[in-house]
Length: 207
Image (cartoon, rainbow, N blue to C red):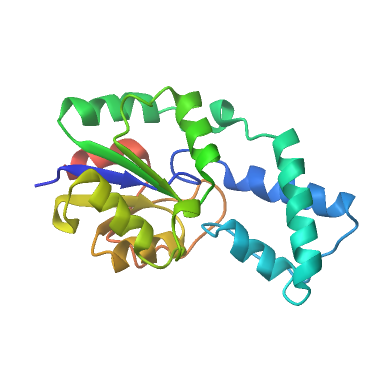
């Protein structure tokens, strides 16, 4: 019996991945820095992203990262505009069925809290954990194992909703069934998921 659902945030609850990509590219252009090749950072965490962008010069990498954090504060994510419009109503339906709701995101804690506030779902979410709270990032299972512990559930009593291959792997490594939301833009390899859903309200059929 399903007692809870754990959601990834970016690409699932909010269509934010393109915004992140464009903001990061804008910053790098202003810094006159050119990264080698095209890289897909969907589902990745901050540290891994900047290690990939600046793999050899750790001092310069840290300098760029600090600059980007300041730039990011000046260009916050418009979560209210990027939120999947189904989220508030869907979360209310889950709570009316007695389900626990968790959010397990690689993003920073303040980013998750900003999204929750913009969506006005704070009273509906039982547990939040961010990548900042973990020592091992997705695809390691730590974030999902800790979310399960925070919700007081076993893997058999919950499932995860993800989009990226990295997130899908993390949820599976924690012993969870994982449903992948079809990408809103482009393509991703979601073949490792339990199933792929076209929209978030499809989850109601899985309960």
